[in-house]
Length: 171
Image (cartoon, rainbow, N blue to C red; front, top):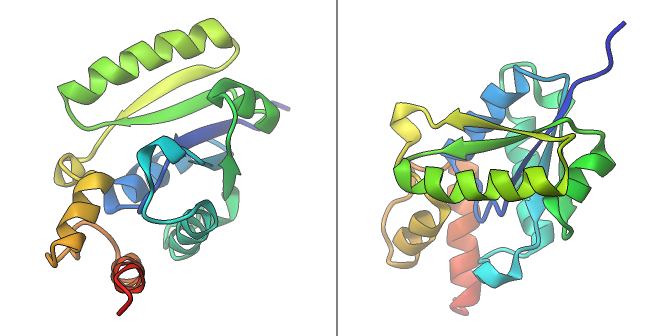
C-alpha cells in the first residue's frame, strides 16, 4: 500500500480568483490530499485579512462540483513554505504559471526552495488559456475603480469584494 500523496498550493488568495480555482481543481486530481496554504504576506498589503481569505478559499472549495472538495483544506501559514510543506507531510508544492514573467520568478523560487528542502518537489501547472491573464492585484484594482470583476471571480467572491470595498469606504 502506497503512502497518501499530499501537496501544497500556496498563495495570498487576495482574493481567490477563477484562475486559482482552476489550478486547485487540476492539482486536486493529481494527489490524494491538497492543502491550500494561505500566506499571511503582509508585505502585499492585502485587501482581506488572513481569516477572510481562508474563509473565501474554503467557501470556493466547498462549492466545487468535481467531487474533490473533501480532500482539500485551506490552512493559514506564516513560515517558510518548505517548512510548512514538511509539517503537512507534503512531497509536492504546486505553482501556477501564467506567462513568461511568472516563470522567471517561479524558477528562482523553486531553486531556493529546493536548497531549503530537497524532499519537496515544485510542480508547475500552466494556467488554462482562459485564465492566463487573471491576477488578484488586477481584480482588486478593477473593483476599486468600479469595474466589473465578474469574469475573473465567482459571484460570491465578487459580492465579498464589493462589500469589503464598501466597508473600507465607510458606505
